Amino acid sequence: MKQLATMTALVALCACGGGGQAAAVAHGASPPAVTPTVPAAPAVPSPALPAGGKPADWKLVWADEFDTDGLPDARRWAYDTEFNRTGWFNHELQYYAAGRLENSRVAAGKLLITARKEALTSMADYGGQQYSSARLMTRGLASWTYGFVEVRAKLPCGVGTWPAIWMLGSKGRWPDDGELDIMEHVGKNPGQILGSIYTAAQNWPAGTPNTTSTTVSDACTAFHNYQLTWNAERVVIGVDNRNYIQLINPNDGDYRKWPFSNPQYLLLNLAIGGDLGGKVDDSALPQQMEVEYVRVYQP
Image 1 (spheres, rainbow, N blue to C red):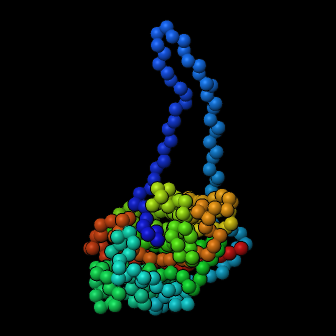
Image 2 (image 1 turned 180 degrees about the vertical axis):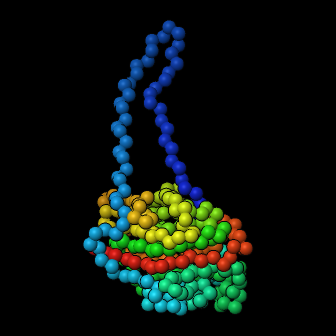
Image 3 (image 1 turned 45 degrees about the vertical axis):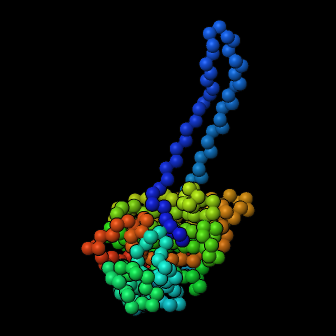
């Protein structure tokens, strides 16, 4: 889920090139001199993905096990409602409610973020939305520089749903301060999990997105561990101890390429519709993202 918008499709890159020169030589004329072609240097392979899972000896520094029924723990979570009145990015259709059990509650050891077909017209910041949901965040309460983040969740598969587990730079500038999408999923593509790493140099408006997908066929019927491993050398995203996308620190001091030496905070939300979520099947609502725990480890 992006601060401004999310790629609606992955970008495929293809390379093509010519290996030499060609010239038409007139009959009877001397052929032109040909400059020898220097063979291209072999392509440098991309660094291998590291093994998945929590790094050995890293310690738990923050967690929510969702073991107290009621509203989410206010010591750990705040609500993001900033753009309810004006409308959310990406042409999303939901109103994000704060402190409303119908949209965010803890029950039976799980956080339930629920999207509903309803218009909350009595809310002071109501912006005309026909759907309600919730967007929880740790901004102002907790942020981290480096760590292993693990969120165990079961996703909704109703068409038009767009759940996300992600992080944003605490300085508040997008894409300059970075974005780490640990999990995105849309109901129209059940089981396709998206991971993205955005910087000022790699983002969708610039045409240089860093997004990759992986398949979790039962993402909507079973719980899975969505994971981020982040240190001074790289950020890596994976599922169930299997990594599938990374960004290596170029170590050249260019903040546009590597803003990840600074704190990021965590967000959990369930958007409806929008550029990625697409057309909404109202008959499928309500839909829930269920979260068993959120854990953050550091060295």
